[in-house]
Image (cartoon, rainbow, N blue to C red; front, top):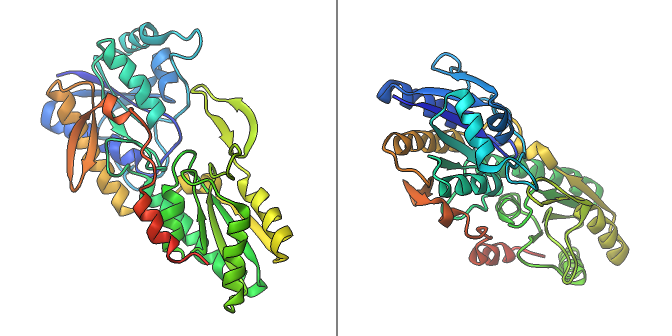
Amino acid sequence: MARIGILTGGGDCPGLNAVIRAIVRRGTDAHGHEFFGFSYGWAGVLEGQGRALDLETTRGILPRGGTILGTSRTNPFQDDGPGTEGVRAGMERAGVEMLIPIGGEDTLGVAGRLADAGIPVVGVPKTIDNDLAGTDFTFGFQTAVQIATDAIDRLHTTAESHNRVIVVEVMGRHAGWIAAYSGMAGGADAILVPERPFDIDKVCAHLRRRHDRGSRFSIVVVSEGAHPVGELPVGEDRETDAFGHERLGGVAVALEGAIEERTGYESRMTILGHVQRGGTPLAYDRVLGTRFGVAAIEAADAGNFGKMVALRGTEIELVPLEEALAEPKLLDPRLFETAEVFFG
């Protein structure tokens, strides 16, 4: 029997609670382990703060969005942070022997450094952006796509009613997975992603061609990290978080003005923002999160550390953390080519 620490780091994500529930249920019933949930990501680990997790405290959380443990973007290795020794000390205070961190590239990046230092770690991939290498899909992505698609469906009716161009900004710092999937599902007339810097004149030409064919409205879906050729992504400021990321947002505002100025078409923008992270997870993400959680505790019980659970095809496998963190998983060009069939 071991006492295992669980934490959720980075942005919240539909399906996190499904992972926590699965780890605790499988680990308790099959292996007799005890569990401690650290509060607010790595911040809780450094402070040794959290609470015990058992069958009772994780009952009924499967359909809940967010995370019952709370989350943060704390980085133990930031500047003069406590680093590995601070994490070890926090684990000792909580009586924890190994860790199962659930997070994206930043959270698992910390996990990778800890694994290299000899701390027993098994990672679980989480991000609505679906940009983590090593796994075909991350949980939370499908729910975010459905939320964005529902919004696009609603915006279609108001765009058509007013003969407007509506620009919909979705999340996606480096990768355009949400924009591509929701844009295709919602029938967008143009999709702009970080992987393909855009030419605003060509975007407007697409829209004019559509209007010349008799359509008096258009929907443009854009990732927050999309940007014109030769320019940086639009940021609310140039300050960075604990992991060096700028806070992006506002490309839809710039596009709204540029499109209306160049085409004369009345334009409006909608920024979905954190709506994409919230609410009840879809069945797909509950199931994937559950499968990830069961696989993670099995790996920890077997002493298979320094790995991350991953979806490969239809199977759950283990991949080295360094493979998952090598580089972001960018949008498949073939998927974007399919989307382009319907532009304009």
